[in-house]
Image (cartoon, rainbow, N blue to C red; front, side, top):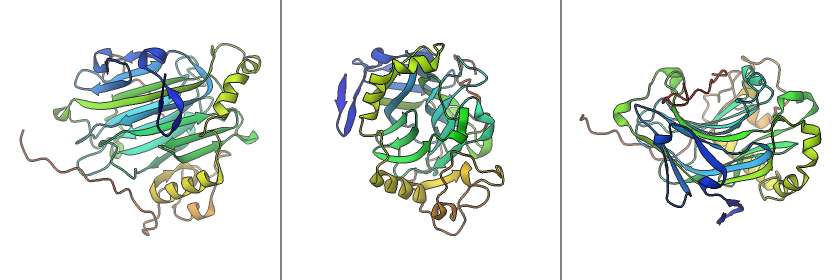
Length: 330
């Protein structure tokens, strides 16, 4: 294990906690196992998975995304137990959505509990930097009472457990996944722009991999097994990322004000009844139309990442380039 500057959780080499998921020929590890490249080409995408499942945890990696024309591509960093609980799975997602020339990558977060994928729960954001130029850290922290998504040291989304959420709050052990795959049918402008393999290979890089939490067999009874997680839960709560301080909340609201481009919480056209996990903020709500998208009045400041130059004119099974993950919410 090694520590990363500005991040108080030890990081792991690939062989300490992960294994290939699919497209193993397109998964390239550095000699020391500290850096992993996932490649999408005409033959396959690629992915890896944690070797253990976790009942609550901190899941984190520094990621650099493919550059140039990336329409139709999705790079995902997420937790799920869909392989074990096919009809009532839990899931926490960072999904990075590629784009056409001159348009930036976007990131989407999702929170699903107990198979609630038919009820949306996605939020999308622009990024305040170019994610293809250097690594940025993306983290998910999941406790019994709280879920927080971070970009670098800034929280961008919080879901607090409430009694009204019931089973929609993720509660079963999950694995961590990282993938790159062809999502031409939905990822860019609803499928209008497809992956163009003339620009392949598309390379996403992962480093500073961190996992912290209670490793648990998903088939154990959660109430009794949770008692065995007390030490791990205490370690998780002791991290600097586990608590939403007033300063962090202000930083989160500022990020969302400037960069959030869609929230299911404000999409009353799609969901007339407010979800119990929505923490509605009146100043935030005033920026959004009933479609969940910002009003066209210039209130939100878009990301200022460098535009990609237009080039000069010249020239799912687990082993396919299409990852099997079914985005039922799109």
